[in-house]
Length: 126
Image (cartoon, rainbow, N blue to C red; front, side, top):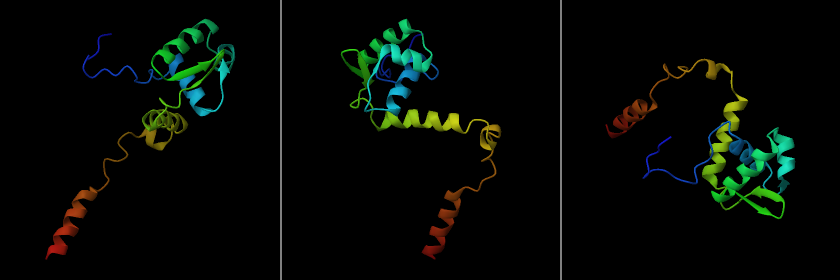
């Protein structure tokens, strides 16, 4: 798939529901621990051959690091942006199917607070 070359960021997170994303989320949840590729395969139900290839790709992108056979999240790459994206994904999964998920226009009738603020400012000037 072609991408916009100027805006492409090679450190962007892997797409949701991919082996790379699953591995990153798992490692990010336990940043102080390192796992063997086989352990990751067992924990996540990913074929062993896919785990090794995926870890190599994640390492090339700076997301993971390894010492010998053990792999862990790279804390230098695991910044607030990465943490927030993974955190938002986890929250979305946790609340999937709730009222707000089933009613995407839940906020359509909410008042515009900016209008209230403008009215308050106008009143204060008088």
